[in-house]
Image (cartoon, rainbow, N blue to C red; front, side, top):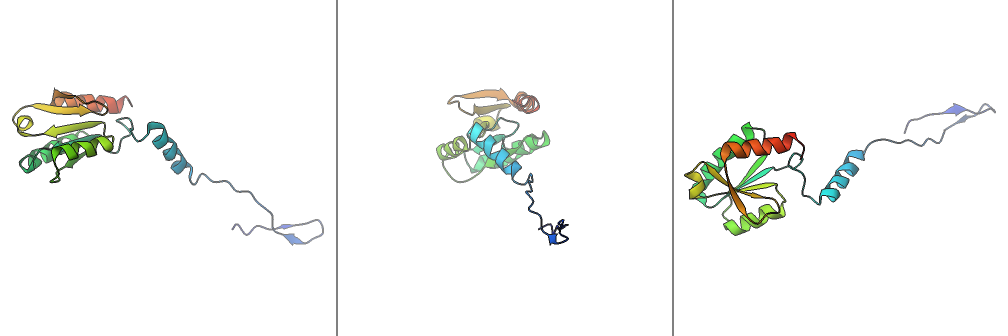
Length: 145
């Protein structure tokens, strides 16, 4: 309450009726519009998690964490799924989260400079070099695509 008063012509003090408008809630409404518009599949630059790394097994977790650290140094938002679930379940979870990029890391990826990348909405996994992948993601972030 603003505790406002005014004096009427007759000299009596009155409380005005005031219609007050605030921007409170505007951000929430705007976020609601964005979520609805993109149906949760945000563009890379806006996505809370830009890259999801899925470890095939427990022996791959340390490498996944190292890879995640490299992405974080390049200002890429990344999460590692190191749960004991099956690879299939981990992939389904990442797909349902609508993460723009998913990396599946097993023995082959640990022993090479190539990453197995699955783009959101695609069924096929592609191979790409680490530096090239980082460059691609950063370009998409900077271009706001």
